[in-house]
Image (cartoon, rainbow, N blue to C red):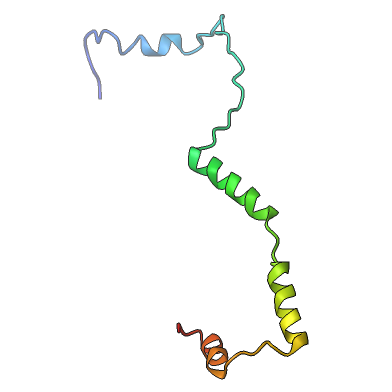
Length: 91
């Protein structure tokens, strides 16, 4: 296929293939530091968890009271209470 006549910018495309535009000046960048933000809910949750860590797992006063009752023979649990606890029912 032959195209006759002058086509303005088509022939100019191939003239500039070897020229590469380069950036001579690079903009300055500033270093940005990492930042951590904790929500108010997370902050309160953290305080509550720290308070729970300070609470003992065993309430020694209750344990001592039950041991004292067992030693004196005063501690008794009904069969119904035992069955309710085993079955996980509400009394």
